[in-house]
Length: 237
Image 1 (cartoon, rainbow, N blue to C red):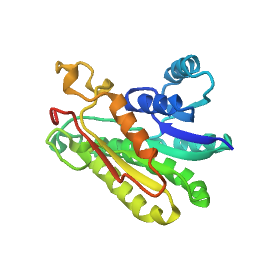
Image 2 (cartoon, helix red, strand yellow):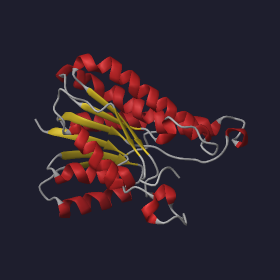
Image 3 (spheres, one colour):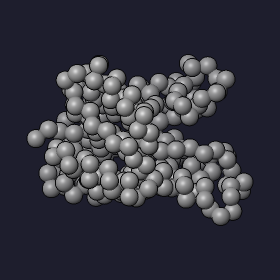
Image 4 (tube, rainbow, N blue to C red):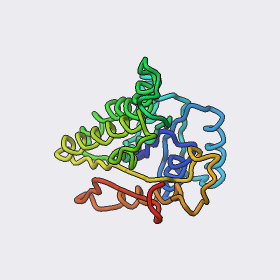
């Protein structure tokens, strides 16, 4: 039975770099994104670069519970063993809490995208991992998970919550031999920073985060990196 690396939000930025990093090592990868067109480009690119590696894709918006359940069913239909789950799906909307819509829609959206997407997929795939007593879960948190800032608003709240969920999973799953890692990247040069006038060297590369995740995964089963806090060399932006 083939081992699967599941990466949500795998067509761009950090997610794309993680997909490629594991494919470089010959791992079969399963990923999703909202855009079917982006997934097609990814599939074509990966097929050319890594012709012997299986890459499975599904168009899904994981902020929607039905799509999250559909993605879980898709992963299960592949009849593989989930070796790694990287909950990378997320989104960012800047602004202060006091300026957000009073109906709470921005907070609910940030929670749906950044927290419930990871919660739903993890809950769907976890029973099989527990039964096998194997697997490694990475949750893509942020430096915003541990440091509030004035323009972070509901995004910070959602990322704090994801960090808390990661800690709960770590405490619960250690006895099942499942490793859990919180990934807390600082400013990384992805589409989120499109249009910035800051120089590229002020940011980390997505490949830096992907390499760190792969290194943490590569440790012996007797060790776990509980947190990966990665910042640009020149500090936060």
